[in-house]
Figure 1 (cartoon, one colour):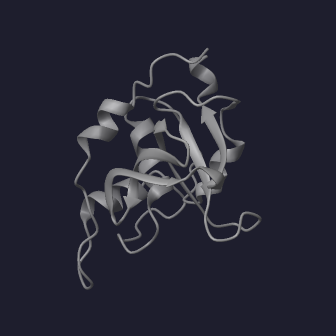
Figure 2 (cartoon, one colour):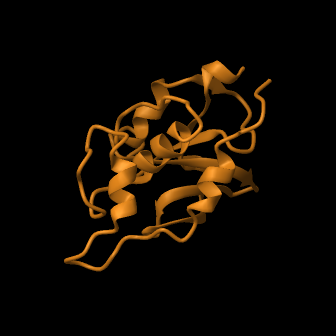
Length: 144
């Protein structure tokens, strides 16, 4: 059984960080990218995975190092039932494609999963997604 998601206070403290208008870039998002294979990119590059990598790094947990959301499907251990703070990996557009989204699971209802994540409507915020887009839930192997 997974323990406490010690990264969640860090992630919550980032709520409100958002992309800047065209021609500008939020340096905080660039910091998030620094924990991935797109280090140095601005806030116009997708940053959901960068945010998850950064949040985990703040508590000493190595993430995937990748800016691809679906990279999390090969990280940690799978969970059959989500727990608060676990990493939720979602499909985007084509379930069989490479595009996705990743964030921290908060709760679910009959139709949606609610996540705290980066690049959710261009900000760190809570947002909901169709439950059928969930590809998997993951937990750090080191915290089992």
